[in-house]
Image (cartoon, rainbow over all chains, first blue to last red):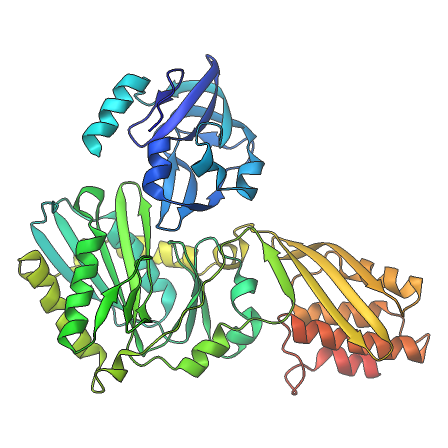
Length: 126
Length: 354
């Protein structure tokens, strides 16, 4: 299981990569994709949609189930990774490259963990 | 290790239209209480239920099915399309994530049907089979930390109607939506000829109590907000949810006529033809162009598309064009969702003959 140091993590298994204080890429973690199994579909939000920390902003379908993906931040969708919609398997193959959205105008976040804390959290949950 | 379930509840619905049932299921999921597992038992009459991320037109002849009093519904879980009639019983297990245990829940179903003499087994994809034939397809969704595990139980489903309902026209549709997987199926009445909904519900309730080691209570529906269920049902019955979902797709229709070949390529977005192109080695360039133009912007409905072709082809100008247009219109109806011939449509062909 991979836990890149430069990322922050949520308890609901999303990762955030801040590019500056107000802007960040969001995706789901290696642990999330492993639990979900083969991903076959992703519903992404639209550019300009509002994001609220802790609330669902997308959902994914795997061969096992449909699950919500929660936003780690409050802000606005600045860019959507449309390529992911065409190739949902990218979430399995390279979860930390498979960003869902670029969030801008970030004004708040959920309680985020660093890699070490998240790794411990996952070990406990598993 | 089993989750700490301290109460198991059963609720059944007498309603047989899908939207209220799926709405009730969602509201039950949303309000599952700590330490509780709910089993909801319900039936839909003459219904095709498609998976959350499927393209309706790739799974079902939407228009024809509805003309025959069929309900088309989209569920919240993933996976493929299924047909429900009153020969099918649906079960749903609803619980908070910490109390949710698909293996244990499946054990309830297996135990119940084994009591009825069915040699039932769970397969890799969470479906339930008897002698390699599927009688229960299962699917899951998770929303705000609450989980739903639901499935069909085929007791005496009309297999001919099922086949008909899930057979799609010949046009090649392609989208990024999720595809259905065909499986060999079996009705439980093959093993237990006297099986009814009531008997199956009794066995399920017994098995539920045995697997969890608790007494099954009836869930008191008055704890739910009926207004919330109505709101949810209205959303689930909306065309926006059932047909929309913004899953774009492309359609290719092709046929060789005695006078030459025709191929139509359409891209459909939000239920409308966004782009259309026509190829033919027989028609004149003007007619080819006119047909392409006439189809762009149309709603995705075989009869409407056919009518536009007839109007655009300039049938009054030439007898040949008129004949070709009629045959192309027929092809569109037959290969898409049109009601086709057989006296069901009146508009297009009669108008063209005038």
